[in-house]
Length: 448
Image 1 (cartoon, rainbow, N blue to C red):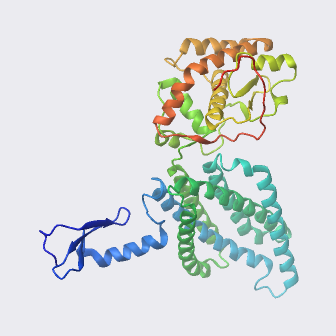
Image 2 (cartoon, rainbow, N blue to C red):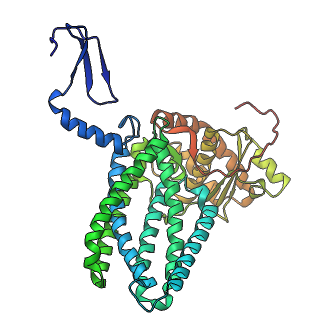
Image 3 (cartoon, rainbow, N blue to C red):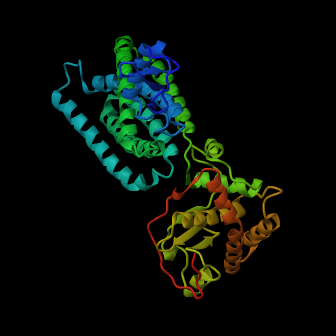
């Protein structure tokens, strides 16, 4: 053991783990002193576990919400593994395993129809909703797990309805493939959020290792449960209900634990509403717990970002009104009767331009659909605009929109500065803009 009075040559540290202090020995060799020399064996086991199941450099290499999310995700994966085993037993019984009167051909046809229907569902869902999964990853993640529980329930019930067995199994397969698309896509979005050192592949791989370990534990428990539930439907339904409740609760806690700094429409709506009411922008940690995870029943305008021009205007006069007094990289139009706001984006519009355009649309939504609280910023101006937008004839709506441009010009620089200072990401967004882009010419156009 080197003398404590010897000057150390250097120290080294692996991530945030214990440091080593290197000292010169009398014989010229290097020796080191660890920070906890009495716990080497325990630390070795811990470090082996961390290296196998956690991303390299944990916890600095991942987001702060990584651990609580993974804990609840582990719980839900275990519960899903148990209910999946119950469903597998029911499906095998339904296709004729153990029944001497059933044929291999009939079972094979049922299985092929189930897989084929699922493939069709995967293609259709990816086509219809694929571009929306990034924007609302939390909601779609919760939706996928709820739909998975429904599909499992259908498989457990299927043997009780032999006349409709194939139809029920095919519908379940259809749902499960939708779950596969939604779950896989949202998992990728969450992995991108959690990876903080361009280590998406490592985070994804370790997440797969964690899930495999949990599924192995679920498999071992299933081996004990299956003999107990065979031909005991009441016990099967009871276990399904208990583990499904655990599965849904754990999923809710998992997605609620995620704190995303990228703005989608729900988080931008919360931030803008808070800014108008309180005068300051909430942090991601403050806004994320308020983000809705289920469909809301409040009235919202249908906002189309990146809309084609025909959704905004139908005449040259309307186009000129949309451009009047507008030196920004977007055009906006309001249709009160349809309850829609259409926003056309200019070629080359930046992420900040899109955030500003969406903020403008959400400002219109606030004026038309919500009551303004007392003490709101620019309260008199907002109340005046609210009266104009709600009561003005259709021909005067464009004039009111011009005034909202002027109001936003005063508010948005402060709002944007607040977003940046509180930790929101503004150089990219999840606002779901369509791909239409316009290029128009304005007189005396200023550089933005």
